[in-house]
Image 1 (tube, rainbow, N blue to C red):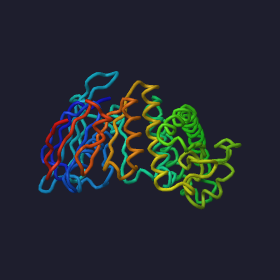
Image 2 (cartoon, one colour; image 1 turned 90 degrees about the vertical axis):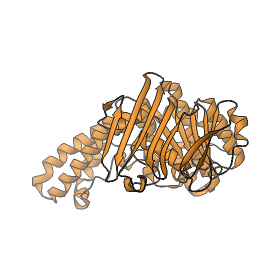
Image 3 (cartoon, rainbow, N blue to C red; image 1 turned 120 degrees about the horizontal axis):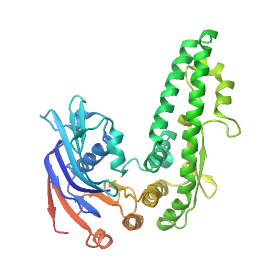
Image 4 (cartoon, rainbow, N blue to C red; image 1 turned 180 degrees about the vertical axis):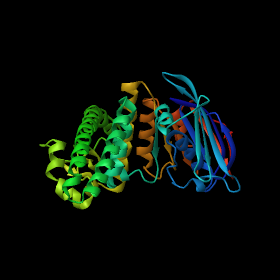
Length: 366
């Protein structure tokens, strides 16, 4: 997938911006508050329906305006040219269109635009809670396994229904039937979710080892999947054994919604042993591996949004990372306060440089 045209209207301090990105590296530089990160936000908003910086739509809409619009023309490896547009009102109301037709779900745009972000929260993939790692894992499975998102959504819906039944039962025998019925749905769908995740990780592990070796050959990473219930038991049995206690809490305590990844470096849990810098390297390699696997499995490229080059990785690792992204054919949107330097050598001729100043974006010499 490649962004060929990007139009932004009334997003933060960007009044009206139109750029034709390079298929390789797009380098946006300018002072603090100029609007560089807002360009990355526009791409993320279009692809995932939300900003990676703020959950409040009212903060995204330019002062004095009542809505924002982001449009893009993309080149899909299998579908050809696709046109996607998103309008979001200050009150949160939105309208998505794909090739002029109304889109029912944000996932319709997400499947067209595999986008990953490297920003201030990058190291949370190593040091943060399980939810961050589950999101990373589900992003990867979603883009290589047709139908996975529907299975995951059905599972989460079944968990919500079972939680409601647990609260209604209150320990009484009257609610036991509905809890057991929902337990069967949760167990069947949960096993399917876990199976898909495990299968993906088996493939990813080999690719990840190669990606990490390219960035930091002195480090080795092992990934274990903790499925969210005892490995030696079926999910249905676990839910049955713990039903009485779950009635008291009113929530389902076991299943893939409680899963986590165990990241180990040199046999030790990474979150408690590696430095912040090493954590960022690990997280970068994990995202790089996903892009490479998607390229191999689906013959699709990933767009990377890299906010503030140099803030997440040191110079040597940043250069290695960019070289690896170029090798797997990723399109890159990167911001910096400084004009491009070494990045020109990595990009070669496949680079476009944009100067951002007071909400205005102008293309400079590449």
